[in-house]
Image (tube, rainbow, N blue to C red; front, top):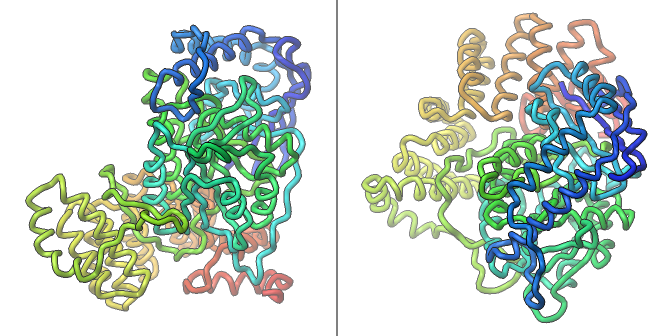
Length: 626
């Protein structure tokens, strides 16, 4: 289950308070209730917040590795040198403000009554027309802390959904899976680490294009790309004024034409949004000003991730690493942001308030980011351990001297045996090498170079026998080549090595072979051992499938709804749930899930193709048009 709260502050400010605060509560997209309250004047919150921002800026001015642009001229008279004390005071005053009776009793208590499950997915859209309110550390609100899967999202009171170019025959937009990564002015910081993390988690699933230190025209040209982009990522220096407005991106280190504002590229953004742009990420200091300027310019925002305040380079890198890891696991965008911010809590002693600096802004009409939609139902197992990947260069447009990392086939064949012996003898080298060879195998697998792919997977498994990714990928390859014994043995190896994805695939195979009891045992191990929501979703789906076959419809419905809540791409779960609802005599309710099945099912997968045909039979108008 998922809940949505639209918390609208209305007109007001810190001096006068907010006299008419409304909280619209929704379940599964339908409004259930609306509550009225107010927030008292809070000049202390305003004052401490300003001091904290000044302190953050002062701290970053003294750092050589900050993503705020350091202006060379002039001296600063900033004297706030105790950010931890200031931030603790701000947290205390924020909670005091939000626990006042007129807000706590009239709104928060009622929301807590409606949402009894502390693990429920909860999106809170904070609607206001004052970007300074967005900049407050809302993460300290006790309600958010008490609900593990809750995130507060900035939203303006006025918004309109921009129509995008329609799908043709169910084929997704050309922008799907395309990510434009703009690496701006990197003086004193290392944006290449951002590029490495994006490549590590999404490089084998998405089309990544890197644009390094472009001028303004080069950036505009890319925004007008005919295919469009699904995600625009920026890393580098940026800044905004003390009020969190007038955002500025430092895109290169040239003497002239080295900055852009929203005004400079708004037409390109509008074009990109029509083409399918769904997410902008500005991993740079004080980029909240960019979001505020987008609202001012009247641009119908897709989702935007920005920074509330100056941020150290290493924290910005850690945020990107976590964010794209969770997106690769197909977490909903707001939950991926929440979890990535949680991962920053470890740095609170070094930089007070670090976990609360990133912020997601979007409108309640946004249907959710769907990356990786064009790939097969069983993705390759990319490296997931904590070992850093082999360092490699990344493609940067057509610029010279930036070769993409590859392993020549002949070199691979000639040196594989000696490399394997070396890696086995040196455990510190082995995981790195195995990861690179597994990736090499995946690329050849996708290019139908099956012999090289198979040899690569076997070699990677021998180098690092404790990691199951290569065995899992080998099983997929053997299955594709109809080598059943090879596929079964490789998947067993992946299970023995504890790879979570393997449990889901083994249980699926057992269901197809009509071995429900064995399947349930494997599913039980999956749910006990995996921490990834995407894998949990697959296992809940499989258990719902077993329950459906057993005609235990209530239990099947519970499992399938859980699977859908955990993953935003679940065509088989949608299909199975529709079947369950029909069996329970609810054909009208099932229609919604048949529609969801059609949106994301892949006809090249036999089980999903069967679901597509069933959905078309029940949705005759849609069926005739496809």
